[in-house]
Length: 294
Image (cartoon, rainbow, N blue to C red):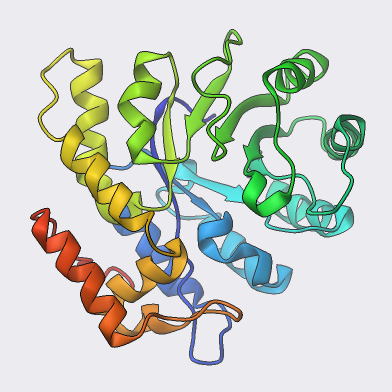
């Protein structure tokens, strides 16, 4: 069962033919956990999940089913079709995974009732599933409200256990007992903790893991915050760029495996990459990827 903590929306490492490099992706996530993260979510939007096949995702799930950090791996689906979601979740359950980050399908004219029906159909199929709702209007075209999240948590109290808020309209005001709220940005970490949130699930913790973990631990231990301002500035720097290409462009500077992106995503030009690196150096942030995917 997932708890409060600092989590990464894990990157997917791809082969030259753009299939998923399962071993390298597992090793990348393992490196993040060893660096202090409480866990890693595979196949969120950061992991290019909307563009990956269920075939590749299933290979990854089978691989981590016997991993020593299995309890610190969590799964998204990244699928639009209801039955593609069901197919992948079924494979996950067969390998011992019960917790899923689920975004409603991207489609026009969604209603609250239609989104309710989507989650209900999955819960009816998997009565033991634990769902963290993914609130990300920019990608799904739908923004959850406090009222609707409250309704879902009331209708499915054993199944819907939290929300990742990447639209940032929930984390300050949503209050549900025994319900985990994870903003999707390091810039919201400390403020969210002060509001009662559970931590974060973030793309940039693929790089900022140590800083984010220190902010989390210092808050819990009632210590002075010494790195939060730097953490926020780093995140704001990345937010000025397309996030997934920025992360891969940065990390490919040390390991060429990160150069592979699925269309329509593209790597930065050398000029744009150097601009990003220069801005991060101004913040004295020159993290090493430790060649975790090597």
